Structure formats: C-alpha cells, structure tokens
Image (cartoon, rainbow, N blue to C red):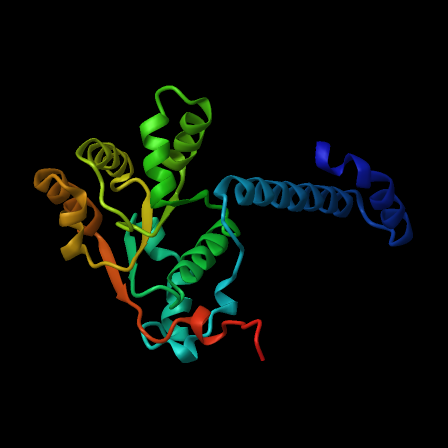
Length: 233
C-alpha cells in the first residue's frame, strides 16, 4: 500500500482518538489507498489525453444551442454509447461548441476510469505518416489505439492524399467496434469522400464510422465571434 505509507501516522492517530476497531482501521487504510490510486490514475490519463484545454460539460451553455438539451447531455454522460463502441459526430460551423462538447465528454469519461485520446486531424495525419520511424509518433498512436475513446478534432479540415487516406483507414479499422470515436467537423459526411481522394477508401472509412453512430448538427452564432474582444473602444 505505497500510496498510504505517508498518511499512516495520521490514520493511526485518528484510530486512537476515535477508538476504531481493527476492522475500521483496515477499511480506512484500504479506502485511502484506493482513493489515492484513483486520483493518480486520473491525473495520468488526463496527461495522456493531451487535451488542448479543459472545459467540462457543466460549462457548456445549452441555451444558445438547440442541437443538445440538458437532458441529452446528461444521457451522453451515462456513457452507454461508450460501452457499445458507438461513435458520435458533431457537425457545424466554427465556434458553436463542437470541440467543447467533445472535450467535456472526454473529461467525464476519464473520471469514469476510461482512457481517452484527443488529437486534431492535422496532427493525426502527421503521426500516421511518421509512425514507422519516429518514436514519439509510435508511442502516441499506441495510446490512441488502446484508448476507450478517441476524439478527432476538425475532421476533413483539409483534403488528404491517397496514402494519407489509406493510413487513416487502417487506424479506423483498428478502432472499429473496439473503441468509440468522437469526430468534430464543419463538413458533413457526404462531403468527406471528396476530401479523402480515393472513392474506395472513402467508402470503407465512412462505412465503419457511420455503422454505429449518432450525428449531431450544431448551429447558431459563433461563441468566439459573439464574445470577441477589441483593442478599440
């Protein structure tokens, strides 16, 4: 019980003060160890996730967004879809909260004991292309493939070459029905085939991504533009 070692003197004093039984002391020791291990694991998983920022679902303003109600967000937080390896796709223009919702779900999943990986589409393509000869890329992709939830931000932000689309297809195949994927994009799946270049590869990717999937269309005014700051008054 390595995590409890430093707290042992305090717990023993507390046991004496409150006249704990041996069983009560053992329960307190085990509970303390379990709590510290869970906290340590959570911090490790947060580091591995590599979120660009941390915003919870509680910070998301559903009043300005008709696509998701509080009830639907609470339903997503139950993570039945994650247990079923179900995918989520958030579509909409920039600034409507797609990435915020994705990260909020990722944070909530980590606090449920799940492993999560966040990566932008541009970074993912770079990782896939350098996996065979860059150690950092190999390690990052290994964690992505082992994650319970993979969040890919800005899907189809730019067109792919055929070899890039083929590498992405291999990753999607590795994750298919083993992990859940959250995608954010400002383009709908009907436009992805044009961006993926090869029609055959595009069809195979879409087939796996959309097989078990909920597509959520998010609209409204850009939060960043609505709350933008100016240097002039």
